Length: 506
Ligand SMILES: [Zn+2]
Image 1: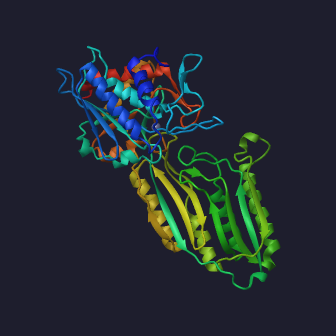
Image 2: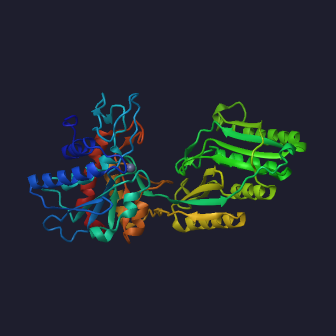
Image 3: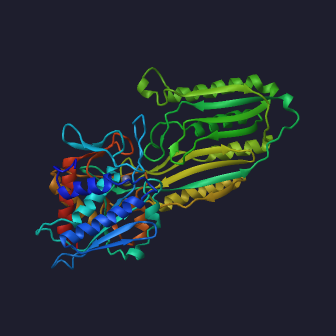
């Protein structure tokens, strides 16, 4: 045992014996599901506790404990966390996350738990340990109403477990939910964004026209960009290579007839893309003039992203934009090329709206994520997010209209809901009071412009009031991930108080 000396004992026992000792990458949760069910069953038997353990077809697990004596009228409360983890290592030899336990350790200063060269899986193993730990608390003073602990699968790759959840299957009773997967000591999450992909596609038939000798072919290359997360980074002055290449093509197309061959940029819907390449031709008579126009527009872009001598204002310090002459190739006719360029360029990118209630929170955004040309098809993927579902619908309607004008086929991929921040629900006010009383200073309430499972629960569990909290964790999704020991104890004690005094909100 590595964590034997840490408090609260039950939390670190679950973290080490259940979570860290059992492989649990996303979409490979069979081992951890089995381990959790076995461990909870055995421990409950040892302790003489009666717990109900349920599992649905997606692999989500619900553990239910009935109220302690005399507390049958207390409202039911749910704690929720996800079972899967992101697997990253910086060990040169790699790390087999499918078969090995996580090499946990206590850092030298005794303040943190981390893993030796791998992600730790505190996201969200510490949430699981806190939630289940509460059920095994052996404190006579700990009076509680009915408790439900919901453990989901496949959160990290797209919230699959939460999406598959049917509250009827588990007969979920709770209208108060604490999501143990977001926030930090002194900060609670009270809202998140929903999102969904919109895919544009068009069949194309590029040809050699036979008059290639009259055309000059070019390759336009935008690269060296920093990139970033399309949620958390969308408000930053980061360039999207797709946006830049479309605006250069649009600028050139305003003066010259372009024959488009291909545009390619981006691979992931949730990343701001770093590199794009477009191939096109122009009449040979215009070669020199087009090059001059290119230099002009490229200079304007550099003036914006690498302005002046102050390096801190160089938002894209490594950006490169090249235009080079290439060999003739198949291309599209001028009118269609123009329509494709204009309609992709019309797809909005970046922050579309800030929240009117939460300062500095991006409410709605869109990411021009992927443009891909294959032999006979051009595809564009745009990923929109909003914490307000009606605002998400507005941006999607605009995308459909752009597609219609541009002659694209459109495919609206399934979207997940946002969690609209409502800072004044009775539950949130109650939890805030408890948290601040214990912490001795104001607690920050934050909403994030990224997905959390709470967004999905807000539409599935009618009338649910939620909050998300967690001990201090750092470096999640990287080999530097670590969790803070004493803040874990703080959150555990806070959960106890919230549960025991819960009737106060009625
Ligand atoms: Zn997580």
